[in-house]
Image 1 (tube, one colour):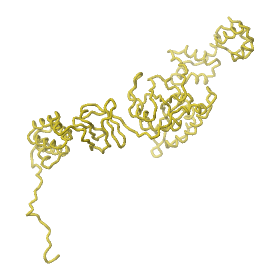
Image 2 (cartoon, helix red, strand yellow):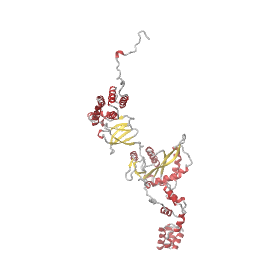
Image 3 (spheres, rainbow, N blue to C red):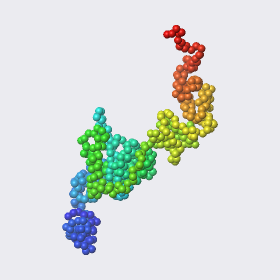
Image 4 (cartoon, rainbow, N blue to C red):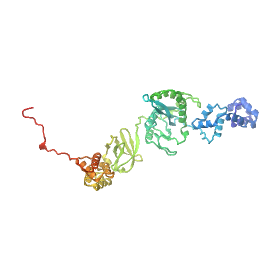
Length: 490
C-alpha cells in the first residue's frame, strides 16, 4: 500500500462518507482503487496513524551529518533525495532532514510566478580554465548567464572578466540571441552593474544605467543575500556546471573562442531539451514569449565612462589628464562627466547638461570663451589676487613674473600653473631660488611650470653659488662672418 499524506487519507474517508464509489474516489485523487480499498479496510483512526516504524527504519541508516554538510556546501534537497535512494516521499525526507539539522535550515520559498516577457535574470559564475600554449599558465574564465524566468530560455557565454565593457558586450549578444529586450533586468550586486549595494536603495553604475536607457530596460538589483530574487538563473548555472562542466572535464582549451565554440551546441541543446516540470522545451515555451519582447535598439550603444569632478577656480575640470572648461557659474561645484572615445559631456549633479567638448590629448585643453567671465572679472578674482600677493611676499622678481603670466586675454587659464609655481616655495624651494627662476623664465619667455621648477631646483642644489646661466646672446651685425666668394672664382 502506497503511503499517502494525511490530507489525502482524510479526503478518501470524506468522499466515501459522501457516497462516492471506490472507483470514483481513485479517479478523483489520482490513485489506484486497491489503495482506496486498503485504507478503507483499516478504518479512519488506524489509517491516520503516522508510519513511525517505517520512517525510523530508513532514517536510521542515513548519515545525517554528511547530508547537512553537503546541503551547506550547495547541494539541493532534490539532489540529496535522488542520490541517496530514499524509500519515502520527497516531503517526508525533507521533513526529517530539517528535524535532524543541528541549526534551523532556511525555509523553502514558494515558487515565484513570472509573467512572460517581463524580465531577464543575469548572473556570473566561475568558468573553465584556459591554458596558455607558450607558458602553460592557466587562467580561469567567467560564465555570464542570462535567463528568461517564464520560459527558461537561456543565453550564456564564457568571458575573461566581469568588467563593465565585457558586461555590456555580453548583454548585446544576449539580446541578439533572444531577438528582443525585456522591460526589466534583475542583476546581482556586481561592480559592473551596482556601484553601491543596498537592500532598499542601491546605486546603479552610471554607465550601465546609460546603457539601460539606450536599450530600453529598467535595472532591478537583487537584494543582498536573497538568492530567490534570481532563482531561475542560479538554477540554470547550477545545471550547466553539473552537466557541461562534467562533459569537458578531460578536455583542454587554449583559446576563449574554442571554449565558446564547444559550449554553443550544448547551449542550443539545453534550450531544445524538454523540461521535466513542464514537459516541453525552453524554446517551445519561448515561442509564446518572444512576441512580447521589446524590439532591439536601432543604433548601437556607444560605450561611455562616467566620473565626477570639481570645477577649479580657473573654470576647468581635469579628467583623465585633459582639461575642459565649464561655465564660471559652476566654479567650486561637483559635476558629472560622461566620456566616450571622442566626446566629453559635462552635467550638473541634477543631470542638466552644462558643457560639451571634443576629447583632447593628454595634458591638452579644450576651452570655450563663453565659459569665462570678462577679463576684468578674471583679473580681480580672489584666487588671482591671492597668487599676486603670495608672489609679492617672495620677492619683486616673482611678483613681476606672476603679473606677466596673468597679463593675457584669459588670466584664469594661467591660475592653475601659478598655483603650481607658488606651491614649490611651500614645499621647500627658498625665496632666492624662486627669484632666480622667475628672472630666468621671464627673460627667456618661458611660461611652463617645468622650466621654472628645473631652474629653481638647480639653483638651490648649487646653494646659490657659481655662475648663473647667461642671458641669451646678442648678435652684433657688424661682426657677423658671412660667406663671401673670392673675386677670382673658386
